[in-house]
Length: 334
Image (cartoon, rainbow, N blue to C red; front, side, top):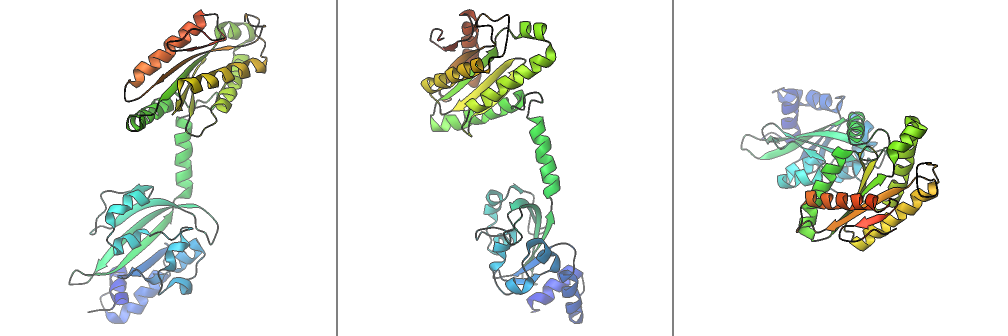
């Protein structure tokens, strides 16, 4: 049976003669694409120069060892090639940010992941292709892994996704992002039996504000209110979004009615403290907001029903004189 490097060389270069093994191996070492090869026990056979440049790890440091994993991660975790060597195919999807589920032993395995690259102290998003090589008896001989730096493309994609989910005026999540977030929280809430609170908020007499002060000042007003809301929902699991026009909505997972009411009152006071002049306001001539609060268990109520309850509470807050908080089932609370 041919040795490992001979089989790898033939696979990589398509060169059948053993005398050309050195040429094919050298060719792989000088490929511009970062490439490394593991043997059937997970030790490094080849670590080419492009891989050295990508990781900052020299070939002599890893060839003959299984220490290559620490070139890509700050902890010892398997590369895609390691998972193939060890037959741990079912774990690929959970360990990688993206995985081509159509991958196979015949056409290779394809995945993408963020790698921290500890030696060069940079974080790169890599597209990874790994293919097993078998001998004539069907036994695994080695695995070839190639890497492509996709960081710029990934960051551009992430920025486009961020812009698509953000309201351009306020920078808050938009209605699309709100719908997606609430749907996800609803699924999680059904399994955890935790309450979820929704705050519907409206800027009082905003049409009159726009008419009196002009739309540019109205936009500035909405941005100021948005900054207050972003500060009010301090937990990373909360969401603040612009629902439409001068209406905003906050989603507070795992928050009781009492806790949501505290947040709503904090918002009321914070907007008042902005002291934005509004001559049509009945509250010290300053801009105010009204808030409707609804709380429910996703296992017992639909998200549409909870939104409707919060909207109804907001309507009652408006009817009660504005600049107040109403919780579903309660009276106005100034």
